[in-house]
Image (cartoon, rainbow, N blue to C red; front, side, top):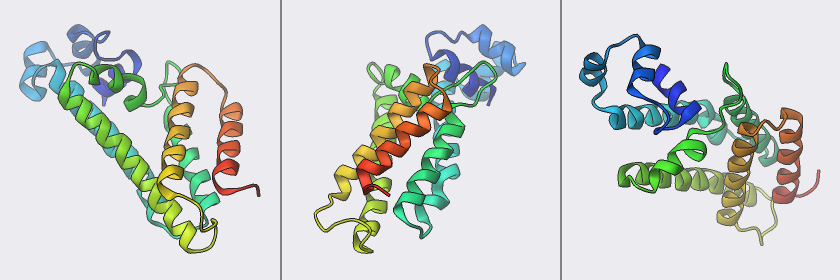
Length: 184
């Protein structure tokens, strides 16, 4: 958890082994023994972040509820995650740090792609169910709506990290929901 916090704050390159050692209270040999090298600790931290984020939203993605309410709850949880942090908003690990590492590391790239495609699919399933229940018109494309919903997650992650207020982020979310599912 301490390593995850450091990597979320500064990314891979800016987080030194000394930083990790200090934050975890473990010396370098103990860090290597427990987690492998810095890259392996980064990957394990990223996996933990993804597992925690999935756990926070899994029930909402599965539960039966109107699409507008489902989206609002998912985005509220995302904002809670992105705006947390003792040193200020941390944003999303995938968007803020892992995408940078994905350029040069095929394992991290695969994890990022899996996260992005997985979120698209989870949203697309929600939109498909909403279409089948009549909440959306027959012409609605669940796959495209899923990508738009994911894009909204990404923009609030970036904007939260940049210091945009929660109120402004909620306005973006509400506008995006209106575009995706129609005005109230």
